[in-house]
Image (cartoon, rainbow, N blue to C red; front, side):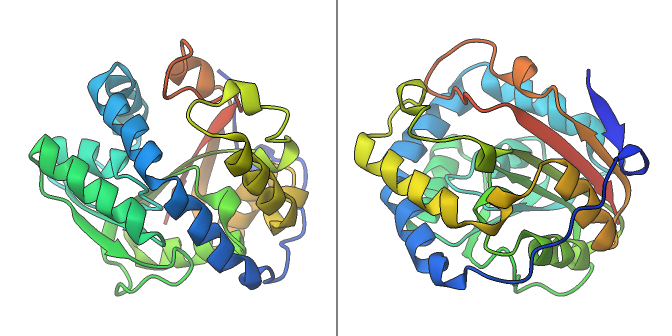
Length: 254
């Protein structure tokens, strides 16, 4: 397992200034167009071995104690939110795409678990400070025009001792067009649009997860930890949920 902490990071890359807000509407439209097919993928994920594999990754890193109040940022079709609700936690899932939230609400209802879904900007959360025991996210940070601001905001809504878990990949370093034949359920038009957006995102110019480790410390987190060997444990075979880009896991404590 390849792991390192903030103290072992070799560099402190610059945090890019706020930029790219003009992309926000385009990004929202892209993910809204993918909502129905994305919901189908998450439905499959909830029904197959991926659910137990993700639970094994998440549970050891959550704060110790009774039922937690957890925020799932960029919840999409609600996979993490539903899984955590099944484990007995109180979960709120937020996303910028109402179409994605509708898919998440439908999946939660089908699964028989109560999850609160709200339309919200990941960089400007409408919650009071110190509201959550944990914040969790997957495949969101790379899409944000200002990921550093998001980390600061996620720190703000966490209670002292609260934990951030972020699962992402260095998507900025790859061409989605080159990976088109490895993605399930995305047509050529959508892939070209995703690639066009990727090239304009500020975080695509950074080396990750090294950038994240520095950004987390700058946002006020401590005990920052990274595992770059996540994908071999989750994506053991190619199916509807397969992700060809190697993912990493980030954990940080407020």
